[in-house]
Amino acid sequence: MKKLVLTLMSLALSVAAFAQSPEEIVSRMDARMSSFDPEKDGFGMVMEMKMPIIGTFAAQILSRGDKIRMEMHKGDNHNISWEDGKTEWDYDVTKNEIEIKNVDKKKD
Image 1: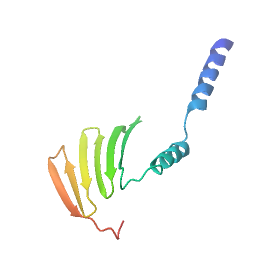
Image 2: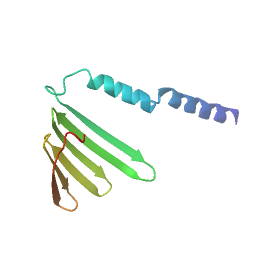
Image 3: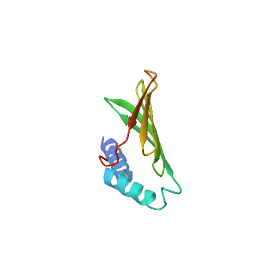
Image 4: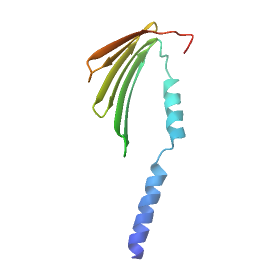
């Protein structure tokens, strides 16, 4: 019994030792994003979050200057958004609809 308890405790401690807090993740992301010029180089990011009750949420974000493309999946919902600094296009793949909006930079 002692061996089982000690094994479970050591497993829990090893998992906790290598886990990252949200603050560590954000600080690493900020350091990486500030190491280049997004106007000239651009960047891409892929996120996948698995939540027990809600399900899986996946997103791919590509950006260069004022231009941004985001593709998001959550369950059966699939959306693609583009923005060029003046106009925003939202394409709902499941409904096969596009919504076009003018972007007001002052509100951002």
